[in-house]
Amino acid sequence: MNKKIIFALLALLAGITIANAQENNATLSASNITIGTNRLGGTQITISSTSGVAAVGINLSYDPGVIELVNASRGNFDYWFGLHNPQNGSTGYAMINTFALPGEFTGNSTVATVAFRAVGNASDSSPLIISPIVAANVSGRNLLTTGYNATISITAADPNDTNRDGKTNILDAALIVKNFNPASGLLYPAYDVTQNGKTDEEDIYAVGQNFTHKIF
Image 1 (cartoon, helix red, strand yellow):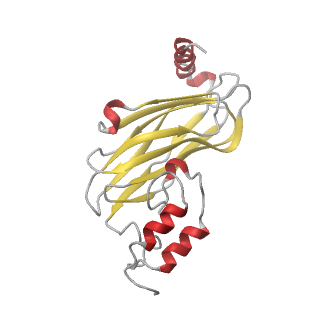
Image 2 (image 1 turned 135 degrees about the vertical axis):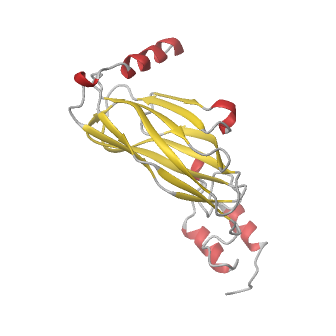
């Protein structure tokens, strides 16, 4: 579909009046996360609604002195996904628009996975403010939507210490094996030591090379 048409559709959805809407409520939220200094971490933005949702638009804002948005990927709304991320995340603002055709989603659905880089200092934190632009069903009827903020914090913990017990040993390697996932994507969990978007053999090797305690 032509991009001009897509943006026109989004503008139309955004212009739907409250009087023409609000038959049902929806909520937007994300999980709190902690990221190591100068490392990547991700969280999923989800929408929850008892009625169908076919299109979602949101603004994100955060403290660019603490974190920077580096990337985002589509969730369940798989027909079209757009990210506006000025100056590679250094402005503290981004916009995401996405929709599904045909059909719509009920219950809990993922809008996007967003990945941040920690650029501040250990113990710094930033709110992740989720502001709804629009959430509409397949008929174009808007839902009254509330955004709930998350918190992203920075830690100085050693990335090889996957269980955060202050030591790097066989228990950290075992945790990687337990959470083995060759496609963890932009979430960058603590087990993805090498931050290649996968929890795999490379992470086990990296931890093994950095043991501070032979056994326990």
